Length: 190
Image (tube, rainbow, N blue to C red):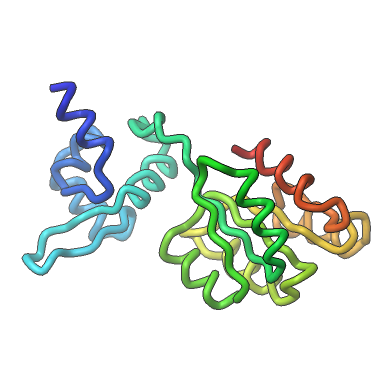
């Protein structure tokens, strides 16, 4: 029995049966949640539902259900910047976590909608149109739980203070402090 539980935890895609066992529910409830749009799933060519691990994790967190994947410490972090050196430093400092970089707002928006990362770092000093993305992501029910760290040209400007209030940012970092300040902030969130 312990082998079966361990095998289920290692899976990346779950059947409705697996999801029912994890959620301590029946298969009919799982299918009902999928049909209502509460639990994200896809269909196989044979018509069976399959649930990605990430979607099941988000569902469990959203509804405060017991979380059997606690041993998985890896978080998904997206960094929106056009500064390759900045990204490289952040990526090196976050070993053990999945870190992806995007230089294009549209590409990042598409990936955010599909994968729903845990944390989004927006470097507004190199990607000026990132505020539109922040507004879009924070306004969508599926992505509003993402934690935001904003990197700006000046932390204490009135516009920056207003940004922090408007979007309930986890942190607002002055770009002149470099990647060390971003890493310190991210370590606190992890």
